[in-house]
Amino acid sequence: MPQIQQVIKRTGAVVPFNQERITNAIYRAAVAVGGRDRALAERLANEVVAQLERETPPDEIPTVEGIQDIVERVLIKNGYASTAKAYILYRDERARRRQERAHREAQVQQNIPWRKIYEVLNWAIDHRVSTVQQLNARIERGEFAEIVREADRAYNEDVTCAAEMIRERRGEIRIAIVAGPSSSGKTTTTIKLSHLLTSMGLQLVPLTVDDYFYDLENHPKDEFGDYDYETPQALDLALINEHLQQLIAGEQVLLPHYDFKTGRRTLEQTPLRIGPNDIILIDSLHGLHKPMLEGVSPDSLFKLYIEPLLQMRGPNGEYVRWTDLRLMRRMERDATHRAYDPQRTLEHWHYVRSSEMRNIVPYVNTCDYVVNSGLPYELPVMGARLGEQFRRWEELYRDDPLRLDAYTRARRISTLLEAVVPVEDESAIPPDSLLREFIGGSSYTY
Image 1: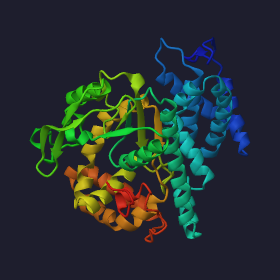
Image 2: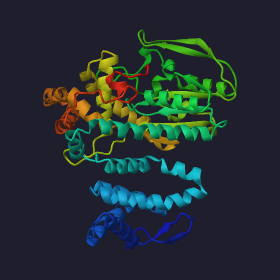
Image 3: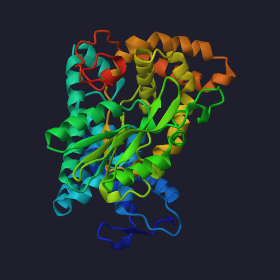
Image 4: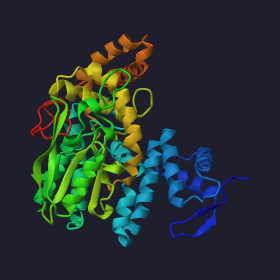
């Protein structure tokens, strides 16, 4: 007898669990894209139920929404992207009717990370960039510039949607935060968001959280002796929280200043007071970290999370990893703007990633909106810029047990970039592109 006996519907009603409904839903989605393998739908439904039983505590009853989320994940994991798309569209059609009754609540529900991933996958399928093979085919047909335009349009529409959500809560929101892991595109997104909100008539006051770093000598180091700027504990969280509360209350604060050249902070440097209708705009790696905002009313916050949620299968059939995209971006940015050896970036990345998993990822589901900064066209650009180096690093670290993480990443990215048609002519990438934040040539000042 299956472990799951009941399920909670959206109305709150508890009804008997029926696995056949899962099979029917999967089969219906498969038929929509030309598939008619009922036995396969049953096997996938069995996998859904097995995963549902693993994830559901014995004393809890699963919800319809939770089961549907698992169905989508199982379809994608097994490589049935088109079927997943049809299933997603079916859910979206049903959701639109509910949105008419609860527009704002539905908006928030749709913007949880898994929901966003499926939207990005849907876009990738429609634009024929859901696999490296599709991307290469379009590049070889001379469509690189078109891919750039399509991807930039999608990203800009995402940022515009976030700006409109903030405008709808004008007078309520006092702090807007752009958060996300390293090299996700926070700075460009913050600039674009600022321009949009200003054009909508909102008054913004930027707050630089980097000025709240403790002195460098007080930062923790990793096992290789590198200072860790990635941990929230490198920031004076208590002072940030105190200043935010005082600013919202209409009080004046004296902002600190951090000198990256000397690694030292000077307190009480710059006076700041905000008006009753001003919005504080913060770009921070740890903008979702709870202690930073402790004591600030949740109703006065708008939290945006940004991540390159690229949905593209690589040469091995696995999805391109977002952390690999961000690693390559950071290498290019550090080399271009900070004269930092990209090899050191690779060697340090395990520490960056470890901090993200502890201090950023657990808070993602607390955000109000998710922006996708993944750009399909960045892979051919990075292939031309970094492909040879990753091949060299793969060989360099192959037999070094102390650099196993660097070797694993180098080998994976080298394999990926070798499979992508490289593009050296970057003239099709506009100066306001998010990618320009990392490769240079941006019209924005960073």
